[in-house]
Every structure is written in structure tokens, then in C-alpha cells.
Image 1 (tube, rainbow, N blue to C red):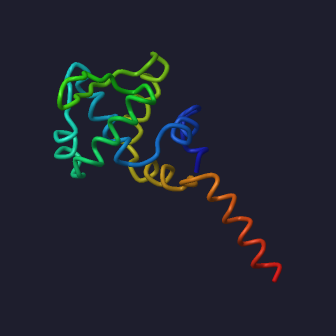
Image 2: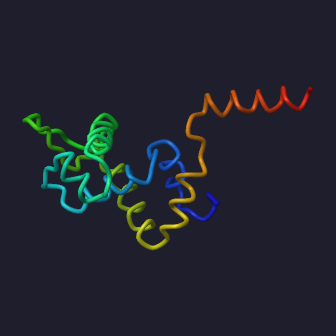
Length: 130
């Protein structure tokens, strides 16, 4: 499946994108980079809870995808830490627009937690040895 994607996109998804909601939040912020959003506004736009939106926005800021305006409530705007990241986000947004199922499949085909995947593999091997 990763052969279907341009160079760097599959790796970017693997390293940076944890969920469809996160991807859609990044794309939403990117559409109007000058606008600052609250978690409530993101929640309404993406049909998620404000708590989930707040976590997504905080994680986006931590990873360098968003700027934070520290008033109450906190507001976030698109702000990638460098132009190559912005380029990759743009390519991914375009790909998601053209081939949403392929992008969603790639996001959800990766292990949620690599440590858990390792532990599960060990558990399966142990069960098979019995």
C-alpha cells in the first residue's frame, strides 16, 4: 500500500499522523493559516468532543504543526515549524482529497503502539509454542 504514495508521504503519516481526526484538524487549520481556533470550534467542525479537540490541538502544537495564542481559552492556528513540513502537509491534504480511502487505510494500518505490537507478537509466539 505504501508504494501507492509519493516519496515521503507514507513516512510522514507513519511518524506524524496518529488518527483521522488529527489529519483533518491539521488540514482544517491549514486552509486558513491566519485564523486562530478554540477547541470548541474545532470540535464543532470535526464532529468530535471539545476534550478530544483540545488534546489534538495541544499535540499539534507540541509536534510543531500549530501556533498557540495563550489567552483563555487557548486558541491555535496553523504554524508548521518549517517549509518542508508545510509542503508535506499540503501534499497529504491533496492526496486525502483525491484518495481519502487510501489515506485512511494507511493511517489505520500502522500499529497504534509499537511496544504493544511487540508485546502482542511475543504473546502470540508463546501461545503457539504451547
